Amino acid sequence: MVNKASKPTDPIIGLDTWNIQLDQNGQLKHFLTTEGLGSEMLTHILDTAESFANINDQRVKKVPLLRGKTIVNLFFEASTRTRTTFELAAKRLSADVLNININTSATSKGETLLDTLQNIQAMQCDMFIVRHNDSGAAHFIANHVAPNISVINAGDGWHAHPTQAMLDMFTIRRNKGNDFSRLRVAIVGDILHSRVARSQIHAFNTLNTGEVRVIAPKTLLPVGIEDMGVNIFTDLEAGIEDADVVIMLRLQKERMQGALLPSEQEYYRLYGLTSQRLRAAKDDVIVMHPGPINRGVEIDSCVADGARSVILDQVSYGISVRMAVMTMVLGREIPDTNRVTDNTSQTDNTKDQSGGIA
Image 1: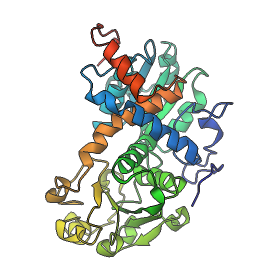
Image 2: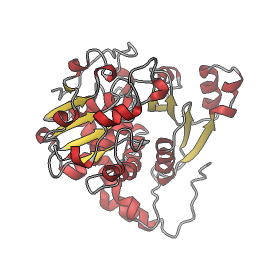
Image 3: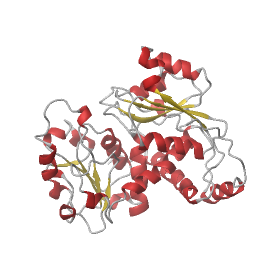
């Protein structure tokens, strides 16, 4: 397993993912991928998220750490959970938030991505949250923004979705403890097209997870997936046997080219997670899903809504994790839990000055 940071050349986008993410002091400048970041950095993100977790329980859910900063949500793909939790995270840090509607922007009139970026930069923004259907788009943007602007990748093509991976690590840590080395994790579904799975696998390996399994029909497994340090299964029940964590992925039909599956019904018959099949895992297994869920395709409703499901917890924890990443990337001091709670209490009677733009 990989514990220390390495300097990989990304096989999907063909770029060195190392230097661009870190500043000269080794601190996060951009957050584009979990690949190449060491265990200390990933653990620091998780620890920082823990310091923000109690904010959701406060009457006033806001701290002033990013007051005066402007954060732009630049989503070239549809999103509900990711865009909304990024917006909530930024507003709870007291930042101003600008949501760009790409469908009505100048991009739809033929303006290039670079021209769009330069125009938004001229408005003196501090951070771009980027989702794009092309792998490598976030790296392209990070390479072309002004030095004072940071970029967080909210999902690019098949490549990476680092904050989703980190909120999944946070969810697991809260349910299973800090020691990932004793865990057996099974990732089930459309591995081929999943940027989430790739980011998860890199994070799991960096955190020294005991065993990571991927389970899918052969047509939905990337070539060379075994080189990422995972064990491959094509039988669902064998793959989730004695698993501590089962992560279900949806079929990404919008990215599929050609007939990779006979039908959704056949897929559910062989790979749909039901209560009966879940019995192969450990009794205290947790079931996860990055969303959106396709009930009756990759997962049965009684499992998605059942006692072992932590799917809604993932959504809640996504706010804390994204608050942590934003704060770290913009170089703000990270308060401990008590200080966050105290700051929240002190702002209880303060009028909201965030100026968030919905």
